[in-house]
Length: 333
Image 1 (cartoon, rainbow, N blue to C red):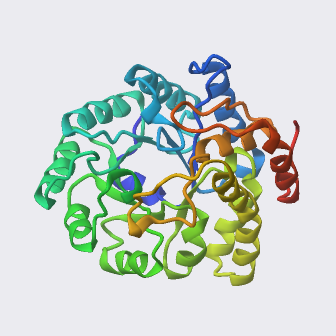
Image 2 (spheres, one colour; image 1 turned 30 degrees about the vertical axis):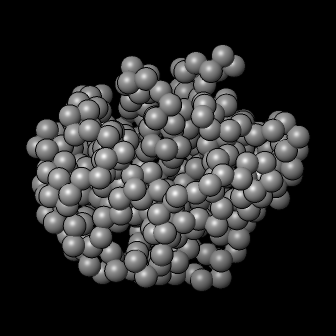
């Protein structure tokens, strides 16, 4: 049973769990592993009564590297396995409006409580074209729509006036904001009516550690796959406005991310055309693979990243194992 959009809007807070999509040794979708990974989250006693949303088939879930048949299979399995214990949001953004409508309608039929929609990528529509894109999707589904404002993936960054217009569209209830500019993020929080839309940090702890002090009530994170204790600690510290605890927890999380950045700089320098509104310290060609490797070391089946993304060189795994232990993770491999 899908949540009504307003009900889903009230749930958009806390930890937005980025679900991994496991592939087997042949690179095929690993359905048993997917089911097991979901059960490891939903059955984790630490996460009982926490504010959590399952977000599947975003960048972390490698939707772009799968066929639409595979994407639909993942939607079916995620909603079936979560089974109402947490709200489920599905990434359904595609380059074309009709494609996005079709995928969003399927997500609703599969039981999703909301969809995450990035602005059209590859092309460069006008502002009115963007508005019509989201209005068309909103007219096609009866569940809540979250805007994914991610210029790194879409080449478009929607400013406050456009977001204000979109926030008034029926069924648009959330904003996953991926700017890494604190002032830009603050302008969005202050410029949008919280009665219309719920805003969370799309760059995870990188931005939540700052914006939690300005009304941001949630963040996306891969941490539930290997370091759930740190995700929970950071969320609660932020909501309590505990500066010292936020700083301490973010520093522990950064042990992992600094390793990812070093890995990229060492093995795979790439030219970058990333939008200035979303520029991280380094490019992240190992983003998906690093999270999958960490999850595997902590007992969650996830396999390798699909091409064209890189996988972790075997000689680097030992260092990752030590970093995870230093973060307090339960390393089992």
